Amino acid sequence: MRKLLLILAAVLTLPALSQAPATPTPAQLTAAAQPSTDTTWWKHAVVYEIYPRSFKDSNGDGIGDLNGITSRLPYLETLGIDAIWLAPMYPSPQVDFGYDISNYTAIDPQYGTLADFDRLLKTAEQHHIRIVLDMVMNHTSDKHPWFIESASSRTNPKADWYIWNDGIPAPKRAADTPPSLNEHHGPNGWVVPPNNWSSLFQGSAWEWVESRQQFYYHFFYKQQPDLNYRNPAVEKAMFDAVRFWLDRGVSGFRLDAITTLYEDPQLHNEPLTGKLDASGFPESNHTLTSGLPEVHDFLQRLHNVVASYPGQRMLIGEIYTPNTTALRSWYGTAAHPELELPMDTLLGFHKEGHGITDSTNPTLGAAHFRKYITEAETELDGHTPLFVFDNHDQPRSWDRFTTPAETFEQKEDIAKIIATVLYTTPAASLTYYGAELGMPTHTPTRQQDVKDPIGITGWPKEKGRDGERTPMQWSTTAQSGFSSNSTTWLPVGSDYKTINVDTESSDPNSLLRWNEILIAIRRNNPTMHNGGIIMLDNDNPAVLSYLRTAPTNGHPILISLNMTSQPQTIHLDLTASGTHSNKIKTLLADAASLGSITDTGSITLPPFTTLIAEVQ
Image (cartoon, rainbow, N blue to C red; front, side, top):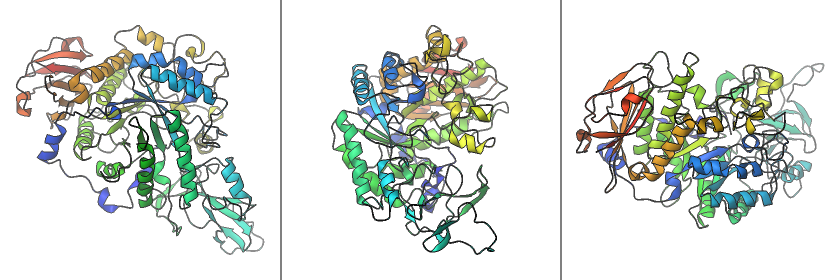
């Protein structure tokens, strides 16, 4: 839901976890190299995020909907995904496009009805696809009946369902000086917010309500008041909503901004970052409003609810941490499990550690990928990592891992490298609609075109997240087949004539076909599905190479990725990793010269190329 600048605070309150992890031990590397026999579906899953407004419009109103998603399930089955993560489709005023929920057990009419949802669920099952819902637990909309009641008085039954406070006395000022923007007259005179907490979406995290003569707390927009989870009635109400959807048959939930559920009950000031947000307000560092220990206790209780249902239901967590050691804590323990798949955003979003080995592309570095893949396979105590390179809050990987100086063909080759990393490690994979096509970020160029509120208020420093949310590009026809309406909620990308499903489906060398083949190999090849992993050529700054070790009666698979704009020659001795042969047969490559490679002794990889080969 949030910009990456968000939640390093998830572990900043735990200094011991913020230290860099140690070099993996031989025992950890040996464990990572062992093939798996676990058939749990989500441990091998490809999860595909759909932003409902932007995927497919079935009724011509310019906004995507549930029936539109249902109509495109054959495409998703062909792509090979295992589950859809469906961004919020609940009733909402749409201030934050669904992340401000006004009813947790219904469907927003612009997306359809509960009957439409049930049809989507049933049809998805027929296409062997599961549905995972986005559950926003930190806050509601200010139009939710719970908040309307809570804001009405200090004595109503839901008076303490949110975080309310009287404020503190305002600084003394001259009688003829007007009050400041967040200074209000309450029962005890002029008051200001109780502390310096900043909202992630600009300005103070406190908003005044005249009917209560109090401030309420909001980590995000002021229209998204935070729930008070220190009140057991709030947890019960949210767990009831979870059960409502589990009873309908969903396979689990992606938990939005889950680390922010609890705040310091003493409301102490947070340290400041020394920076001003786009509105000019001093940023606090969120160490007292994210990652508190109570969140782990809550997740254990939520996990118990989800685990009580059959069918391997699961929880994905939106987690941003400064290192892999910190990520480990969000899995819980064997006795008290928490999240099945906390998002590992270090590999796909974390910039520090990128190996600047090629001056033409400083964001694509073998050292970065080697470091975070290795840590995910050795520092998580055998838990399954969930790798992600794209979502609805970040500029698309097509732009983040390429540079303007590169040609379209080079960018496409780099996109194939990203897809290869995503689908050929033992991790579970999370992708985002359009990533399989190479849809770029279409950032608005004018403030009047911005729909995202943080872009509207923060322009031009903050341009918002519209660029990564533009409609799915299906065809070369009007509006790229997304809608029959000449006006869509966001404009279709200007490149839709060349980047679209129809065009790429008919091109055997397209990025879409590359993704389909990768996912098929991942699903059908026993080694790619169940194999362990061994890093190779560890000191090579330009080429990332790793071996997927084979289960019984399988063949090891070699993956080598040239992450530079120059040809690179590698010399690999697989026998040093316990493999008894250096003979290989190419399974997939994006350069013709790699199709006839038969030995690992000397392989020349053209710029930005991928080689996937089976050891004979």
